[in-house]
Image (cartoon, rainbow, N blue to C red; front, side):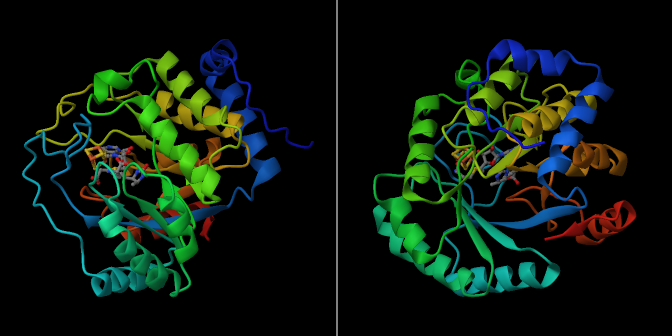
Length: 315
Ligand code: SAM
Ligand code: DTB
Ligand code: SF4
């Protein structure tokens, strides 16, 4: 069967996916997954926070916001040689992509040349490169692409309707505007969101519709489970039911059949069986390495052991 890529999803049909019996839903998503990918291979990315904390935005989930008191040690933009050393270690450990994040509201032109130098140096190690630096102005994405950037990450995080419950220092449209700049520059788009912030199923459906109804689907779709950090407004948020999380992965796979769906933040709270079901439902990428940006990720050895048990290899 050839896969048809759609970008006209309607809320009612996406809600129907969420209401399907669990086995029917993951059978469907796994079938679509198999038509488009080797189900025994996952893409491996490693993250590094190249500028940590003190961010002027007030994202309620984020430990790096200056609006919250999270005891996070702020750090200036890292030295390029240190970044390259971290990238080398990530490559040696098996990562194919190195993702660098900065706690910025937006990229300033004064930092652009230094960012391009980082991209050139990391790229020259033979790694794919990804940056997440906040909002972009016209021309900045093109400059980073010229330097060798492969992906730019900019998440929509949740539905447009729920957005102002989570962030008030920018608008949902600001996010869309940057994602369009990234798309038009020819860079690959990495764009996804977070579940478990108190949103309802309709918000999850609408978030996925925004992603899947872009003219071209994001090449990479990170689905994060909220990491509840003390001092953030969401520190006491109720846990999302594990099946609801897996369903979100499955529905993302069905709606964006050729995109890499990344099982992103939140894996330290998931047991092996839960992660295995996420891979079965269609997740085919992870962040590998003991740290995400500022919070914990599973130990490398335990991820390698899990992959071995499941017969999954990393690319
Ligand atoms: N400042 C830039 C931005 O917001 O685009 C880049 C870094 S920001 C930390 C990247 C993404 O990390 C956010 O969009 C959000 O999806 C995710 N994130 C941040 N804190 C999180 C948390 N506590 N749990 C899950 N995901 C989180
Ligand atoms: C994404 O969707 N998740 C990553 C990456 N893109 C930049 C970040 C997760 C951050 C989790 C909280 C932290 O470690 O600070
Ligand atoms: Fe800043 Fe990004 Fe964190 Fe929001 S998610 S506070 S923009 S670092």
